Image (cartoon, rainbow, N blue to C red; front, side, top):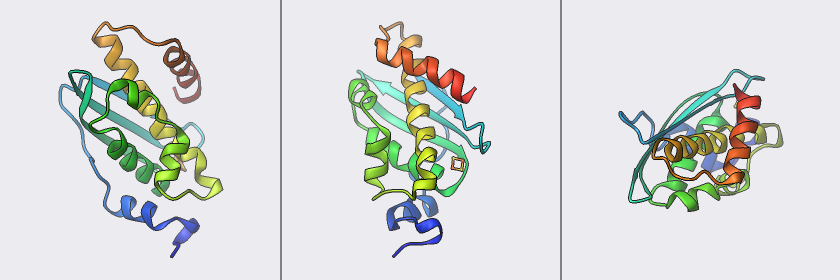
Length: 146
Ligand code: FES
């Protein structure tokens, strides 16, 4: 059954009961992005131990798709290594929600970009090498979202 905007059951489930909502004090990495077009904002916090994402939380001020994609991305990366989390794509997020209405695809970028920024922040703070691809993403996000 599909709801308003033709959202999948999974999107509605995450929207109504978001997982890992909140903030992490003294997070090891934080990423904040905004969508200039709609004004929605997402902040994602990472707690990392031995290169594994031990905890992840988010705060999103946005539409149902933005909240559902934020919620599901936290489920997808919890317990993963930083390298595994870096492989997260827009498509993985959308697939794990059984799709998004075409008009809402862009909303999923918010969560992937916030994750990238949080990983970037973590690597920078812990003085680790930043892969070229992540550096490029960071530059693109700075132009797009800030
Ligand atoms: Fe802004 Fe969905 S409409 S992120």
